[in-house]
Amino acid sequence: SYHLYRSAANSQYYWNLKAGNGERVASSGETYVAKSSCLAGLNLFKTHAPSASINDKTTGSSRRVATYEFELYKDAGGEYRWRFQAANNQIIATSGEGYVTKQGCLQSIARVKANAGTAKVFDHTVATTSSH
Image (cartoon, rainbow, N blue to C red):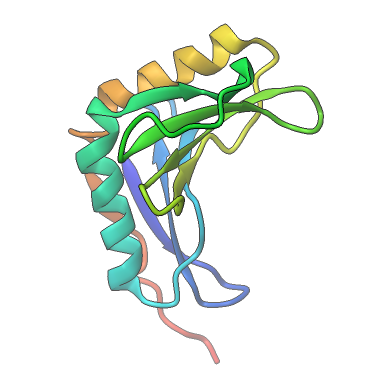
């Protein structure tokens, strides 16, 4: 399920996609000043992630493979990660964590693709009141 939040630190909006066990499997690629912009990013991910191609950047290729794609890459620490990008290279979502093996990262992408399109959205910002 998707969970929409508002940061206590800077009042910006962000979302997480959580598995049935509560584990976070994807996060918004950025925080948003406007709730509507955050929801637009969430909806882009929800709409395009299930059918998006995987672009394996660990093979040395630097070209884009699709308008919306999961970019699989190796981070500075040597772990595998993914980020979901739009054609303008805007990062819409990230794996949030690294994986020791490429297979583990690919399995994460497969789980996200299988669930992203049908997951319900829970808005945790509507009940939040300011205590200032």
